[in-house]
Image (cartoon, rainbow, N blue to C red):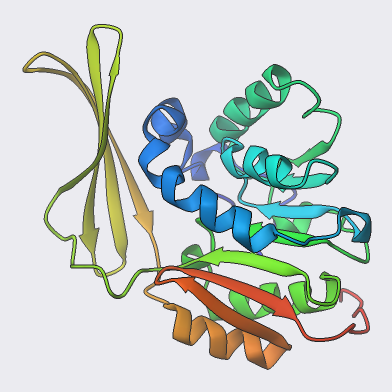
Length: 258
């Protein structure tokens, strides 16, 4: 199931479709506010996971913030990190190189889930910043795969649109950070079919540069996600308005790819 920067039916990622690549320079610098909230949610969702059941699948691993968080929560876990964006993978590889022991435990798949060779069982899955990019057929395929591969009771952590939050069609500043003598900012502006992220670099009151990243994203919420996942045999809990934990009900027989 292709993520948004990869054409369907292709052998590997196409740089022309790397919509997240332009954000890679700024992402980690400005991610702290989001991860101050996401990190504890992920820790709780992964509590009790048995790393001996199989590796953890991180779908849309990005710069590796979720990979690092999963390894902190589960020190013995092995990770399959799937990321189609070449720009994001540069940051991910740097994180692996600079974090002792991480490179030994993380396998990076340069592409989409279709490019990953998965084992019969997974101990858990992290799917952050992905589901809104998939159409209904892509989501259904994902739920089926998770139901088949997750160990009984193992979690899949998914984020969606927060329908309880106020509309963000007006520009909203998400984060700001001082970097040397410069100020970095991230802004979000919503639309019917997604939102636009804008990164700005300022020196005092002077705007030095700006980079805009349009992000298509469906409006699926947790209720609709839970109904879809239930069809595949996954139970859903909702620890936060935009955060779902799916768990397999019982072992399922694997299906062969066509």
